[in-house]
Length: 304
Image (cartoon, rainbow, N blue to C red; front, side, top):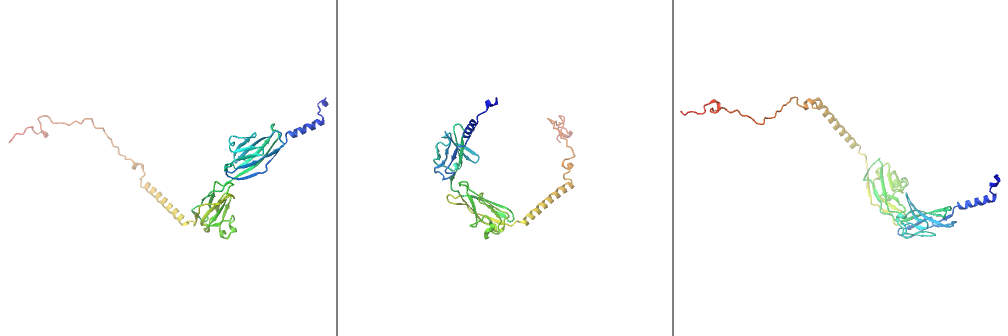
C-alpha cells in the first residue's frame, strides 16, 4: 500500500528544482555605491537588476531614526514626486538639499514576492562649513580641569576641528611639539573638544578654532583669551576664618540672651491682669436742689 503513495525519484528532483527557483534571490547592484554632489545640484542613484520576471521596485530613504518611502511599486511617492524621477536604472534628484544626505535602499521583487534583492547607495550632499562657535573660559585655575568646545552646524560631511593657540596649530599629541611640551591636554578633531587636565601656567593665551570638511573653504572662529590663575589659598583660608568667627559671635549672642532671661516666657508676657469695663451709655451728673447755690450758700446775697 505504501508503494502507491511513493513519489518517483525524477519527480522529486523536478519539484526541488522548482522550489529553489521560486525562492531564489535576484541580482541587484549599483554602479556607484556612494554619490557625492554639491547642494542644489542634480544627483543620480543607480540601481540595476536581473532575474526578475516582472520586477517591482521600491526605494527607501534612511537618515538616523528617520525612514521614508521614495518610490513604491515603480512610482515616486507624493512627498518626492516634484523632486525625483524614476527610471528602470535608478532615481534622479532634480536638485538635492542637505536634508537628502543619507542611505537609500533599492529593493526589487517580482509580482509574487518570491524573488527578492536589494542594494544600498549612500548620498552625501556637500555643504561647506559655517563659522564655528567656541566656548573658552576667561580664566582657568592652575591644577584644575578646563574644557574648551568648538562646533558648527552646516558642514556636510561633518567638519573636523583644529585648535590654534597664539596662532600656532595645536597637535593632537602635545608632546610632539616643543611649543606644547609643558601642556597636558587631549584634543578630539571629530567633536571639537579640547580638554586641559590639569591646566598649567603655559596654557594661558589666545585660542581659535578652525572647521573644515574637504568641501569649500575652512572657517575660523573668533579668538578668545584664556588666563591661567593660581589657586588663591590665602583668600580661601581667610574666608573660612571669617565665617567661623561670625558663627561664633552668633552662638555667643544666643547663649548670652538665654542666660539673661531674655527668652523667658514670663518676661515676654505681663503677669498683671488689666480689666477693662465698658462706659455707660449715659453719664449722670448730680445737681444741687433749686434755691441753693454751690457749696450750700444762699441763692441770694443781700447787699450791705
